[in-house]
Structure formats: structure tokens, C-alpha cells
Image (cartoon, rainbow, N blue to C red):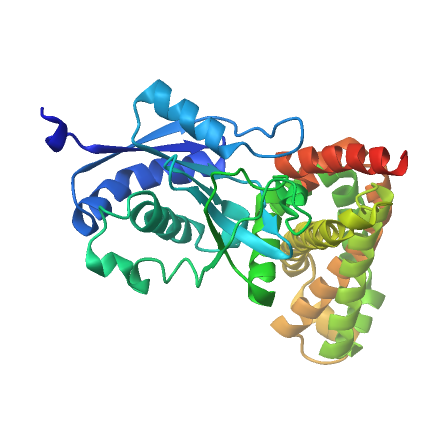
Length: 382
């Protein structure tokens, strides 16, 4: 095979977990997209490799990318990581070093939904517009290739450790000198998308199995509502608005209790870390709230099923002094589940704190908090 006919080899170096899963999907789809929309033939290879921070808390993307290029004979490398990255208050979606032909995509900045398509469009944009601009055809320069990933704003990367760049709080301290492309989502929309991506990275549904004592207490509290007729009468007398208020109070109470009782709320003495602390605490609240809501939905489903099986319609009608319908069973289930959730908040005090923290935080979030604890202690000791 001659050099001119050799395919262009693109390497995807991905963190274990979701980044690797997305990278393997990209490896199946990207070659056809690149063959069709850029000159030459393309080959995509995937490497599952933990993208580690250096001792300064920075992400040495060029070093990692060039090492992968030398080892595997790649023409270009794109790193895919679950590390959140920011430039000031703007979430960074991608970085690129065109001279080294190394790029990086940060999944949290892509949001909680449709991550694969956004990741594919961002990688495509990095490769065809920046790493191999000579390979892209004229229509690649239009916005259609990356419209679903953006709109992305190209920022001028700051130098390593520059005061205006706060990516240190999100996976990097400053930017390597050779990084000359930075794609970001600016404004409130970008911050909301980053926050949603951080919550997804925490995988809040994992919280439920870690709360077995709380679930046991919640089930006991909900059972009380099924077997006592006074609760049926109260549930049928309450308006929908009042039931919704009781439910929200129960969910808020358990969320607050879990965060405070397990030390999940983050506080920083260093003022330079407070913006990142706010983002982290918001993601913690949403993560725990989603986990508690998941538990409530499961509890509601179990309670409704039990109420329908245990309470005969005629007997329920006798107690509420009118003909019973499905709406009455729903109201009983909502009130019982709310009562159970309040009882579950008390029972959560018996849950293992380490297990709750492990479930509430992704591996990256745990690493980030440990690093910031060291920075905060170091800063206060000066």
C-alpha cells in the first residue's frame, strides 16, 4: 500500500466507563462519516485508558495524545473524558492542539441527554475543522456538521496557570501552550448543560440501593397508611394541591437530611474555589434529589399495588362514605408514600455514610473533592 493510499488513522483515547462505551460506538460510525464528508479514507481505533490528572491537578492532554500516537502509529488523537472542564464560568466542550493533532472532548459539558450525538458531532468538528482542516471539503466549513453539538464558541485559550482561566477547578490548571483551539458553551445555557452533565456523571439512580435502612423505614411508614382507615379518610379529604405540598415537603426533607447527615455539602475557605463549590453543591443537591425521587416513585408504585390488593372497594367506600374509585387509591398511595418518605429520612441515619457518598459521587467527583480539600488546606495554611 502506498503512503498516499494509506488510511488516516484517528485514535480515540477514552476514560473507562461511559466514555469508552461512546468511543466504541464512534469507532463504528465515524469512518463512514469521515469518508463521506472529508477527503481520504479513515480508520478509527479505540484505547480504554484512564485519563489521569498530573500532580498539579492539570490534564496533560498533549502528553497523553502524543504518547498514544507514538505507541499506536496514529495520525491524530482525540481524548474523551468524563472530567468537567471550565474556562472562567464557561463550560469547555473541547480543546485542540492543531500542531500536535491532539484534541479532547469533555462529556459533562455535552449535557445529560443525547450525549452520543453531541459527542460525535464535536469529535467530527474537531477533526475536520481543526486537526485536519486541509482534509475537510468546503461544505464541512458550514455549521451543519456541528449544529447539534453547539452552538459552540471558540475561545482564545489562556496560558498555563493564568488567572483568568479556572479550569483547575474542573480538571485542568491552565492550558498547555500548544492548545490553540477551545470550544465552549457560553452563557446560562452552557452552565445548565454542564450542571446536567455532572449530575448524569454521578449516576443518581445508584443512590437507592445504598439507602436500604431508609427504604425499610419508608416501607414501614407507607404500610401504616395502607392498614389504617383514618389515613384513607384523610387522603380522600385532602385536595390535590395539599397532597402535592405534603409530597414536596417529604422529598425536600429527605434530600436535605441525606446531604447534611452524610456530610455531602461542600464548603471552602478559599474564595477562589467558591464558584466551583457552588456548581458542585448544585450537582450534589440534584443528584440526591433525583435519587430520593426515584425511591419515592418505587415506593408509590409498591404502595398503590398493595392498597389495591389489600383494601376492598366496598370497605373503602364505607369508610369514606361514598363510592370508591381509582382516584381514592391514588390519593391513599401518595399520602402513604409521603409518610413513608418522612420515616425514611429518619431511617437514613442508619445508612453507611461511606456507601452513601460513594453512591452520590462519581469517581471523578470524588477525585475532585479530594484534590480541592488539599488545595483548600494548603491555601489556608499560608
